Amino acid sequence: MTTVFDQIIAGVVEDVAAREAVVPFREMKARSRDVEPPRDAIAALTQPGCGVIAELKRANPVRGPIALIESPAELACAFEAGGARLIGCQTERRRFHGSLEDVRAVRSAVTVPVMCRDFILDPYQIHEARYYGVDMVPLLVSALDQARLESLLDRVQSLGMTAMVEVRTPEEASRAIQAGARVVGVNARDLRTLTINREAFAEIAPGLPRGTIRVALSGVRTARDLMSYAGSGADAVVIGEELVTAEDPAGMCRTLVTAGQHPACPSAW
Image 1 (cartoon, helix red, strand yellow):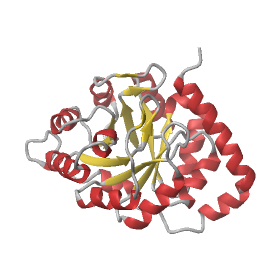
Image 2 (cartoon, rainbow, N blue to C red):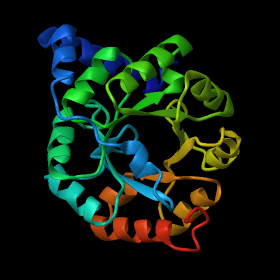
Image 3 (cartoon, rainbow, N blue to C red):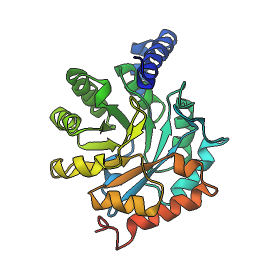
Image 4 (tube, rainbow, N blue to C red):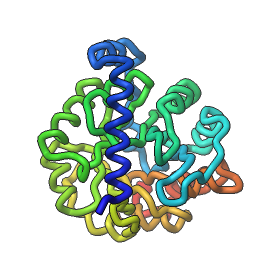
């Protein structure tokens, strides 16, 4: 049975092929090496406390449109002013209504590193992301065989960017570490089953090697949720829907950032 995840991956493959037909790989590769150097996502993620990666997100595959974001740059600036360590931008077009143009607008407006949130399957997408100003790229273990995961991770690093390798199970975490991941993101959301397992981070993070940067994705609604993830070892959390649908997105971001820096936060010092 075809899942939402399968449909997303098929759409990404089609969209990448269409873009490559317009700008060939060789040209995109050249463009990616003729831009401003990437910002240091590792330095941003290793500051004291549990940091916030604030994500601009217009839609999700289940609910459809969730937020009208008229100016990605203005919202990103508000998140940066609120203390977000990185800004994430959804760039998948069909289900998340994102675009690489959002990344470009955000990157020009903020000083913190910018992460694209997409389904990276092909080297073309990595060079494309760098060309548009991306500093950190996600690699989803469940969408890649081991050889492709390692190859894409190496390519990300060759361009000076940081890879966040996303996992959902201990087995996938083992594959991420085997591939050489320094940043591991544990996603509570499973797009194959459309379920959320908020315990996944606590099951996986303690088993990661010392020195691994641990990022929690999905499941953060309140400061208490952030501190719970921090208690299990999170260096940062990615927060999208709860921020962009909040009555005061910038204020909520500030509240969550403050919680992550509070002396009572388990990973604050």
